[in-house]
Image 1 (cartoon, one colour):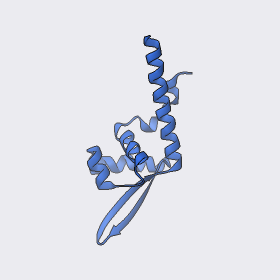
Image 2 (cartoon, helix red, strand yellow):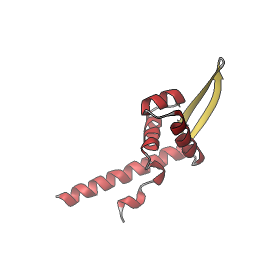
Image 3 (tube, helix red, strand yellow):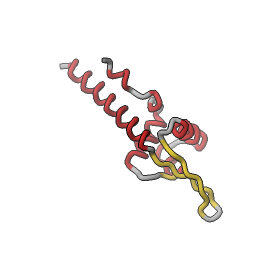
Image 4 (cartoon, one colour):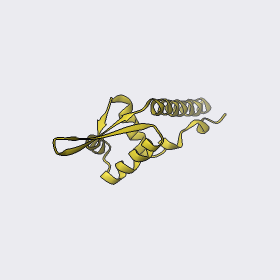
Length: 102
């Protein structure tokens, strides 16, 4: 089987790969912090988080802190499993390329 077959197309985007990576190691992250950390525009981040949310990989919580809107994101169990499987496929691809080089 080709290791490329196990890569998840949802994570091919550099922005989505970054979003998922950040959310894997943080319980939750707010929109502003995620935008700053990944150096994305508001629209770009909103588009990618919306796509990941529609796929069931992340969840979004919108609330107000005082009068200011606050949006936070968390990874779902399905998102965590899918991302781990993607990372394992990348690792298998790298190991296969390393073995072929020897």
